Image (cartoon, rainbow over all chains, first blue to last red; front, side, top):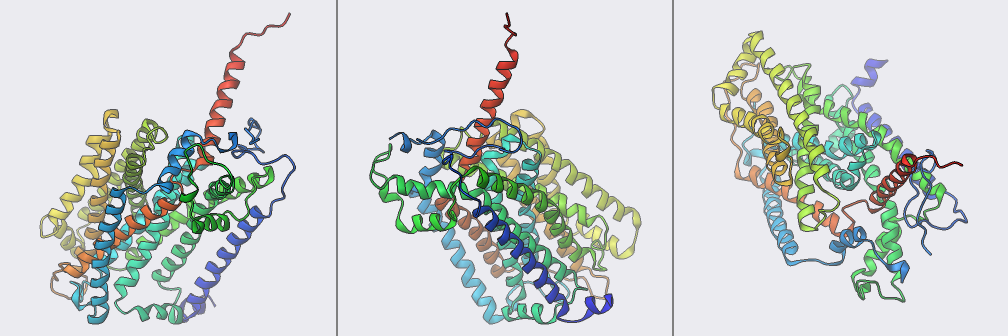
Length: 64
Length: 460
């Protein structure tokens, strides 16, 4: 079985396309997950809050 | 007006996007001219065939494959430097990560292009799709490089999103008011505004979105390290899995990975120094970056020296006839000048400069890096060509000499690399503004915390 997968012409290309395609889909889904984050009512920080879930300082300068 | 006041960082980083100087246009014109000459040579090669190159049986790989391995090696700059430094939370990496990630992206594209150039007939690339067998290391290479290119693209793009949103919002902010720098609306042409708007993907900077972005970047930073290591290991196996003298070696995998990191850091130094000078980024790319990265480069110099010694000592001690012939070609025959130039460029010069702190300056590291880039290209050449001129099969000793066609196409590849890099940073900020601001905020918060802790208790 393994010999057939490795040696048959065209199967290797299929493997490459499947692997690369899966990776591409995963990355698109990750970007989508980030973009679709809900807005909150606190407003937009002038710069990004640093490490919000790591217990560091939560100070941020907000735009007026 | 408070809203439109720009920090020094913003103003400096966005200045190249707003203004184009004459020297920049001159550089673009020069690079484009070299690129055009290479394209003409390539078209000629397509029509006349690979006979216009110096390649022939048994030297069926020459400087195109050398260039391929060279560019793939350089691509380790962004990934390993940016990713590893991000994972280890080295704060000094913040101003240089975008340059490193861009180098990775463009180097991968150029590396893949070299394969297409080396094919001769472009239609042969479809054979890969129709007849590809996973027994071949070439297909492993295609798999790894494809995944690496996708990963590097995402790893470059994700940290750009907040800056793209900032650029998008500047257009909105400028609609009814003048900026502090005068009426700059004209600089943000419509096509750029639309580009930033689309690429910003509706970024609104909420706490949850920031958290998800940082989580995504962290995941990519961890993932991309083994991907990068696998890429150059598999590239080395194109040679290592061949039963050719001085190719069939177990050390080739780690040797190539170390060489890739080595040349990647060197290329980062070159571009970092260039943009620092031309776009006046000295306050953000300073002594700390040159000192720490210089120490990293010195470490990689020593690693490279160790692997080179291990490879050549093992071969020399082994006395296998076919390997001794290739070894002698490098140590004392026609490839000796290349070999000793490689040692000088990759070991002697970098150690002489980088071992002293006074050498780890923009000028010192630039000289060392340029030497390393030349030396690493020579290293690839001395791995590939001497073996092919003296194969295990019963061929007489062959001769390989690159032709004008190959030299022009190589020059065009390097020009295209520089051209893409400069044009990219004409449209997008060279420093990740939000990450540097985040770093400044973290540093300020830590300083404040340290001051509070240092105050004596004052309870009644």
